[in-house]
Length: 369
Image 1 (cartoon, rainbow, N blue to C red):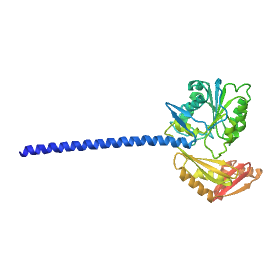
Image 2: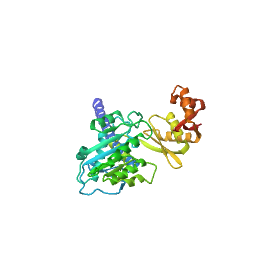
Image 3: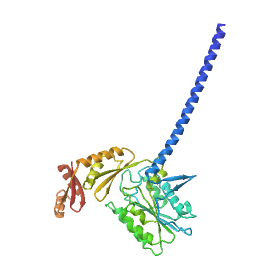
Image 4: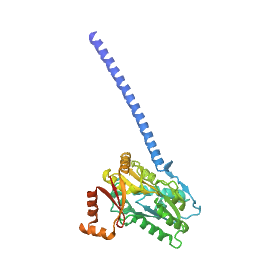
């Protein structure tokens, strides 16, 4: 009796343990399903947020993607015959993040989709065959928002025209304006040709207008900026505020944010330079000059809020003074340090604890804490 009773008790215990294990397994499986559903919803919400940040983003339409223009000034006629697609990309204004997995082929695919939606009866493969892509940026630059070598190699292999641009300020805009002006002067060049300009600089307004008048159908793709008037959008046929959305759609794991800091116009360059020395190298700082005040645009994948606070703090501590130095005096000072202008500026900064910003020939702004 004792042995049989013990055996029955052991069986009951085994059954109970088995039931508890099965119950725990079912509970864990239910929790995993819930977490997977929550993760999926989080990913969808992230895509919606990215699209809203860019102003307009991809709209899922079955297996394809539909891009919504923010402005249409003139639609293409149904009889339009697509012969050429000419792309001019200002890599300084609409930059490409330095991400090893971001590929040019994915970005080009999104651009082809935008054109295909505007041209009746066209498809991506035909657009790729007739597309001539020109990318304007100094290849010598190395910072986190300069294309990764993989992206450069992609462009090389696909046949992108990599325009050689100098390192001087405004060199990218100057070279791109020259190429656009030359295109606008072609006899009958606009017949069946679409020009896609990836930029947001108002300096391109004259060239955009000439291309429109020459018979080209002009598409503008740009990023968000601080101007709400968007005058440049009036000088094209169709405008898309979606460059950031194209990047994030081309690489869903790519994530970065942009914030703006308002500073005094006289202090903008000094705050920018000091900020570059103190902030993480993974942050890009740009100066946007306005009529009275200026804005520092901070773009990065992390620590953007903290960087903005630091720049605001610098803007409250620095003072600016404009000093005009005679050209002969300036050249004599350079000669005194062996002809090294950089060494001269560094020595002045070290002795005076000032931030020297050169604006014009022999003219400086000093920002000092």
